[in-house]
Structure formats: C-alpha cells, structure tokens
Image (cartoon, rainbow, N blue to C red; front, side, top):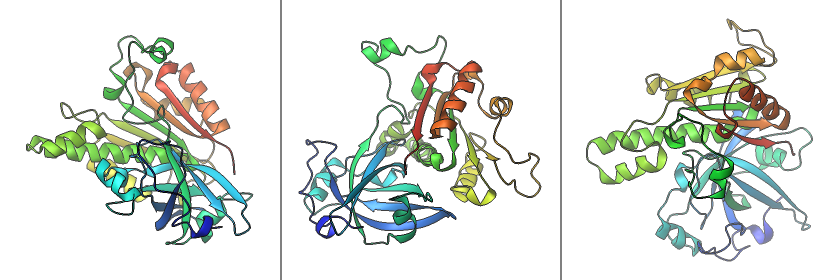
Length: 324
C-alpha cells in the first residue's frame, strides 16, 4: 500500500489552529526490529502537533486501486515531536524541523495493516497520519480541574498525592508495552533535564517540568510489569534494562513469561495470577497512578484485580486493543 499520489503532496499543509484529526502526509524515516514479529517505525510528520507519552496516532494506507485501511498505534517515543511551535508551523509549509514520532507494531497473522508495517514497509515509504490522540492515558498526567465535571466524576482518593507527583505503575501485555515505554522514556528525559536545571539551565528547567513531576523534585518512581510469551518477545529489553540501572532503583522492570521462561528463571511460564500481580506492583497504600495496556481480556482482568486489591478506580487508567 502507499499513500495517495505518492504521499508527499496528498494532503494540503496542516495548520496548528485546524482540526487535530486532519490527515497529514508522513514518511517512514527509520525502522528497527523489536521482536520476531514486531518492529518500531519512526515517522516524520510535517505539521504534527507535539505528542505526549501515552497518546496514539491513526495511520492510513491507500492501495493503488484506492482501497484504504486505517489502524491506530500507540506512540513508543514522543521525544522527537517536541519541536517548537514555530518549527511545526514551518514544517507544515515545507520548511523548518519536522516532528518525528515512533510507533511500535506487532504483526498479527490475520492482520491487514500490521504485516505491511512490520515486514514490507521501507524507509522512504509514504503513509498518512492523524493525531496525536488521547488525553487521559498520558504521563505526566493532566491534572484535574477542581471546578470541572471530570473532577466531580473522578475524585482523587483521600491522602493521595497529586497525580503528577504520584509513583507510577505500568503494566503491559505484549505490544501493549509500547505507550508505557514512551512514559519511561519521558521520565528519563525529565530526570536528565532536572539534573541540568540544578546547574541553572532555565531551558532544561522548563523541559523537566514538561517531562516529569517538575524541577522542584525528582521524577516519581516507576515500576513496569511486562507480560510476554517468550524471552524473544521482550520489547525494548536492552534499553529498559539500561534505564533501570541508570535510575538508581527509581525505575524497576519485571518480566512475566506466559509460554516459555528463560533459562534459570525462578518462575515457570504461565499467565500471571492474581496473587503474582499483587506482589509485582506498587501497593495500593502508596496511591500509585496505574497505566494498563494490552488486549481487551488482559486489561479487563488486570484492572479488576487491581481494584480488588484496593487500588482506587480513579487511579487505574487503561488502554485496550483488539483489532487487526
């Protein structure tokens, strides 16, 4: 599949003041395998609005006969989307730095779009993108407005720190780890910027505020629980291990294997149980902000167990997928 008319001039230049769901021409500028059935793809999207960790984009492919297919994919890296607004406006017109985002795709045997993105798409290929989309499943979180209807429906639990200062528990099933990796990366970027801010760099101070709890304090601790089929299915393993080691214990990564455990593992392969989940996540007493992403059944089961274990429903944010 390709974008209409080769993609480069398929859509008119975007405007930041325009519809955020407007389709934008994009180009694949990088790709890297992640697992035997998945890879990450970097898209350059002139005019794309700045993205936040946890958001997703819609990707549209158009066949030579005009047939179109649209799928939604979580962003696994938004760090390259943070260009200045002037750059974004300029890039929409063909000049200035163009925002880039990374999405991570798992090839599904009966899929229509994912096989193309994982096995056939090449650097230089055009696609179309709209978004970024989503304002609830994002980190750092959007603080509730006490006067808003949302706050009235979802009150914060008594004694809990503000969402932006709460510890963070991330739980991903399979490729559901993608938006969670973006959050771990955002935390790392915020921590680095906060370190620079200590040295008096005002720009870094601003970046820290945008990417973590804020320059007044260190980024909150994060714990990531990943459920995958086999050791070969560990997404971003090398990078996550490095980030955990560099965090001095503030970032922890746990893996659970459902079909094949690695040699020397103390846990046999199998789906995670309710008791294991409770042992592998931050306790409800710490009021963590919890993000769960995976298949419908995975998210439904895990979210239910979390609530049963005392986690406040307003602190459990979910993202689900189930299409092809």
